[in-house]
Image (cartoon, rainbow, N blue to C red; front, side):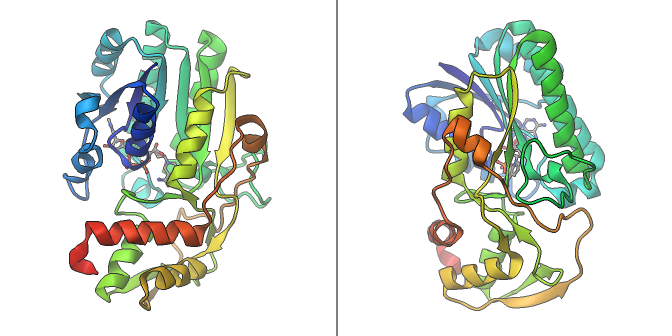
Length: 318
Ligand SMILES: NC(=O)c1ccc[n+]([C@@H]2O[C@H](COP(=O)([O-])OP(=O)(O)OC[C@H]3O[C@@H](n4cnc5c(N)ncnc54)[C@H](O)[C@@H]3O)[C@@H](O)[C@H]2O)c1
């Protein structure tokens, strides 16, 4: 099978590509390699397998580049991971999020339509649930309102997928990822920032009183969920939660990281951030039943693996 993985040089994308290659597939990645934090990150993510894949270095907002890559590619499945990710930066630059995430998804679906690609996987997000009071969050819950531009773009992308499935028979499977972590994760995420700062003995920013809670999902579990979703052909349009199905408060996360690192964190107390939801918690019973998705990595174990990886990548900090 020939896969197009957009965002294939990113955190989740690079792990997925490795698994697809290991299973003997042909993989093309479409990524603009643009990183605000460190321009080397994306290149490093794919360094170990770059000679085994086709690389299209282009922007998903550019419909002509997207269309050209489909004209050449003859793809069986598109896994669309490329996006501007993260709640807080989306408040700082909502337009970048709207154009990248919504226009980009539209361009890819349109290319599927005109080049007869019938299987499309969308990376959506737990943030679409907004301040859902019912826990755990289930796919059929009524979403009353999102509270960040990032979440609004992801909910819009799901709806665009629904249109293309209904109108053009493109099977679209939307996966709501719950805070993904593990080796190669983005440096802007809390676990990356906390690990670095605890190792350096610098204060970490704790927003709110530490009671906000997240459902953290280890990268290997996310990849197994994506692989299962690729083969799910029972519905033309579907939505699945991919989470760890457990919640960890911010205070618990800090304490688990202290254990994994073997050092105490210095806390810099800050107010709650606008756009942050108080908690996320995935009901994964639908994913378990239809995708045989059963998360395997508890947070303490995943953090230990992450810290181990971080230390090998940053020996100067250990
Ligand atoms: N990491 C998480 O916790 C999480 C949670 C929920 C949803 N998601 C979603 O999963 C997907 C992957 O996230 P990630 O954590 O791997 O992020 P990432 O930033 O590591 O990967 C995204 C990739 O998309 C590429 N990209 C961004 N804009 C592009 C553009 N205009 N054209 C082409 N490529 C572009 C980036 O270069 C990057 O390689 C995203 O859609 C994100 O919204 C992630």
